[in-house]
Image (cartoon, rainbow, N blue to C red; front, side, top):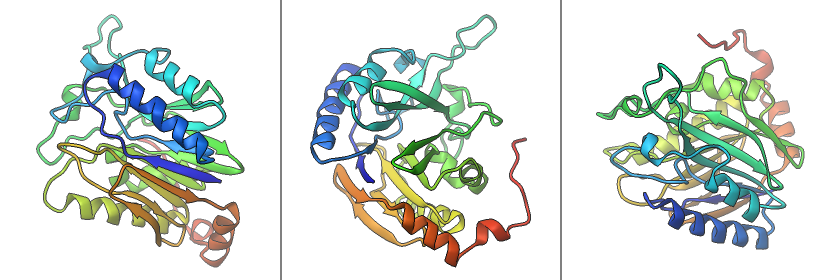
Length: 262
């Protein structure tokens, strides 16, 4: 299965981002991609913080653009939904990755771990997703592709729960905040999640001001098989590689603890 990672540099202008996404998806289709992963906040991004002011509904123009331009592929992309608008709500948004296949929304994941770290407070603008929600795992050509988002990467139990739900591949859309050591931590954590879950990991970091991290593909043995500081990275993912890696390293079978949400 051919996967394409697209590290676009999204801005606050949602209409401009949609045009970039349309072009990127057209190029991906031409390259034979079956899975395309865009970053967290691909719909609209502000490095100073993203909240409900940049949100749009799940059936809004961003998802419509994914559905139209991504026909024939499975697309994972980050957006923000206008959560918290119900009576008694506080008006914050919901950081969400939407999954679109062949023009239809097939699932979404609301980020559980908000980035309240390194001097940032994502929870001032966003509501966390429910920890007990079913993981988002979509089948692409016989490979289960599960979703984490950015800060989730620092919580190994999140990755393990997605793998328990059938993921052979962990897709990690991110807008990884820059800072001392942060690019190295991004790469280290991607490799760690691959090794401990014996799974492919796709790290898809946003480009532009305030963020860091390469596009990275890690195989189930923890080897970085593809990496780029540019905006696009392609990789071939093989179900047989996962099967053989898990035969040689049966750590998922040998474990003695379950992961359950609080």
